[in-house]
Image (cartoon, rainbow, N blue to C red; front, side):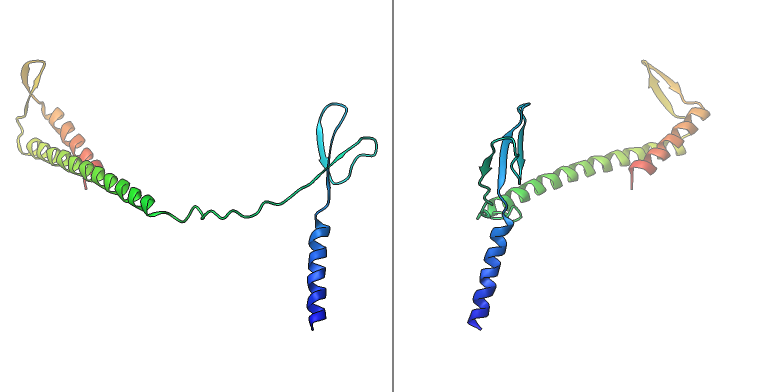
Length: 142
């Protein structure tokens, strides 16, 4: 039994060392550097010792430190505060649009100040403004 384990271990060691073929480096007549498993017949080649790097002992990037978590929570809180402010502004704008729509619909004689003079909206202008306001409410307000 021990003989079989020894033979298996020896076979594994031999197979990994035989897989590591030597690599040769040489420069051709045009000055181009070549790497290959077989050296050229007409040129002198240098054998390169290739070693595989050991796995690093640093923690994986997915592992976060407590300070990273605290920074992420701070960023999340800041973003939530900005969203809340934007929502409040949007709601305020929507309230203004709804008030304007109510004024346009309930008062047929709407006056506006244009260039320092006050003029009355025509019925056509009033209907156009009602349509525009309804469209804005449907797009921006919930």
